[in-house]
Length: 348
Ligand code: GLU
Image (cartoon, rainbow, N blue to C red; front, top):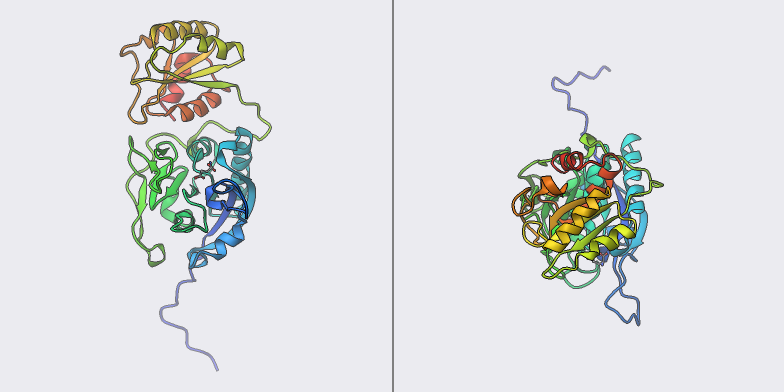
């Protein structure tokens, strides 16, 4: 007997998105072995133990995971960041994942996030997360942060917002996020540019992930930078300015082979007169000098107290020293003239 056709056929079921977790370690995977003398060892818990302990996470999306490293992020290297970038690129190119989550130590998560933001060639979501308290300790922020990061990576509205960092129900842009507390679970801020978004309530109930803005600068698929794991990055040193800074720190960096120097300046990227003179001499030798600030918020402006045009200095705008170092390393692989490097700092 022929079945009558339905007047309003049901649409095909919506394809579930696929999220790949590329674990690198950090406090989120921290554990305290018996008789361990210190608080805990970062990066030791396997991903499956963590995933299995988070109720409802499989209802968010299809999840797979790989262990890329098991380190505290103080040991992160540019070669490992480049390896991560290449793995993420391969996952997206082969259409194996719709989003990627990278659990990471919180100490340098903002650096890896910004690096990936400059070199991953895709608009698909890449979300870094971590925790301030080890996963299986009282009131750990780890389970919720991992759950929220997977929810954001699976969210179509996260596409084309650059690399993101999800911590403590907040969604930060890779360029703006900064660690601002050594212990608090509210350890991250996007003080100068504002949050990219926030998790408001239960991700499984829908409409919980809210976005407030898009990136202000070029990122990911719009970026001209790319890397391979065997790439040799030029040496860039950061020098911390303070009262009575010895100017010969600049000479020491140049003698040790630095091709770029970032000044973690006082105030508006400032440094004392000896240091300015040594830095201008370094520029004459072909070393790039970028003025950033260790204040933690706000922009460094050109030609205010320092004549950047005359000295050949570059300003980092609102990039903190560690991110200015990453951009300068990538920039030096393309350009050397201060005006060309300044143009890259004004674009990324
Ligand atoms: N230093 C460790 C790391 O960055 C612990 C900090 C953390 O993950 O919160 O991996």
